Amino acid sequence: MAEGLTPVGCAEKIIAAGRTVVLTGAGISTAAGVPDFRGPKGLYVTRAYDPEKVFEIAAFDRDPGPFYQFSRDFLDTLGTIEPTFTHRFLAELEKRGKLDRIITQNIDGLHQRAGSRNVLPVHGDYTTARCRSCGRGCSGERLRNLMREHEIPPCGFCGGTLKPDVVFFGENVRFLAEAEAAARRSDLMFVLGSSLTVYPAAMIPHYAGGEVVVVNKGGVGIAAGKGVHLVDADLDGYFREVEKCLPRDGNRR
Ligand SMILES: [Zn+2]
Image (tube, rainbow, N blue to C red; front, top):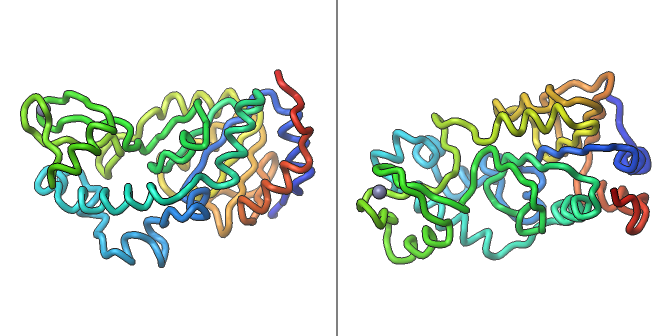
């Protein structure tokens, strides 16, 4: 049975919780204008990117061109948008000592831009890069500068091909052990804007040490039941209501 949770009930849980952990997926960023990758209006469809060429590591090693074409498009889009209300709400909760950790499946860096510090990007992001040949790393800023000068950004040491630390198909998810440990430690876990269909990230809520609250527009791959609340709602609309129910600057730990 689907057991919802009112914004008032949600605020009460946040106040009562000792350790809150959040897992976020693409749905938290679509309201900001970050195109979903796979939906009917997703980047893959509207801009005709083939995910098997863009995010497939063997294809990247053969020809990194399609990935860098995608990345220029994606990073340009990111440059024109701002974090959503929900991104900023989560950053504020962390500042108030009410949020322990954000685990995100997104590669858009919007949590960090909203001011969140304890973020585990399990699918990586563009903040660091690495050479496919010699393994030496560089900053995301250097990568972006090189992307302006070169079609394919070269390693400064060996001339090999740089790749941002975005997790491709065929590569291991990052921070999985830390994410699992954070879930186990939590006594309240939110799953926001994720349909929980991409593994292994979708496994993380199953390790939750306490209650799980899933807020997503549309179906999710987890059943409501004891300790699992499903809320089918627009994230920003829902959390604007939750915020109104929280004490203004209260409950610092
Ligand atoms: Zn190199």
